[in-house]
Image (cartoon, rainbow, N blue to C red; front, side, top):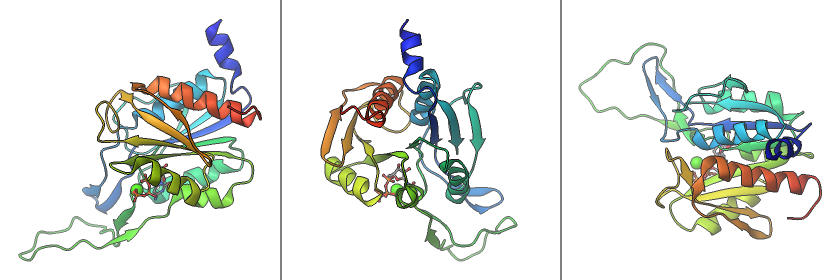
Length: 226
Ligand code: CTP
Ligand code: CA
């Protein structure tokens, strides 16, 4: 009965989820990435699927098995992810951007393995595209959910991101808190909308966080205030 109720929540909705850390190449054997495990994104994709949504998972580097029953698009770089997201954007109802997208990438990607030299190496980096911000600018009626990993001033920084990127909700977590953030199976988050804090979620499993977040999104989309 609970499964049946769950399956009605997002029936007929298309949910696009990004997960994991992007990989920014230096040369054919070296790259820059980050500590993201992709667990939160995979949990959101699984839960959206259970809730009856048509789910697309766009996965960069993830340290967990990918769900076999969810259509998954593998990407490496921020640029790849951007292109994959844009291809899904027009028919997406809910976009959940959990991915840890690199902010910078090597300015030149060497096509052959770089050779060691006597001098030190200076790697020049350039900004990547801000995928979430670009979606915020293109938003028509999509429900846009961003994530914010912070180590200080969590509420202030999260609200700033929500406004700058025109998100409907932002899920903020203090990655220095015990049991929260990269690689853990649990998370401790606060969900904000334009007005401020809407859900102060205690430490719980990432699948439960996903359920709470998607139930809130489903309610907001059907016009019921939560
Ligand atoms: N994001 C994105 N594209 C980027 C950088 C971030 O889409 N190039 C998204 C992330 O996926 C996340 C949200 O923006 O949903 C916030 O990411 P975060 O790294 O916390 O914010 P930044 O704006 O990059 O700011 P900073 O890293 O300086 O805190
Ligand atoms: Ca960032």
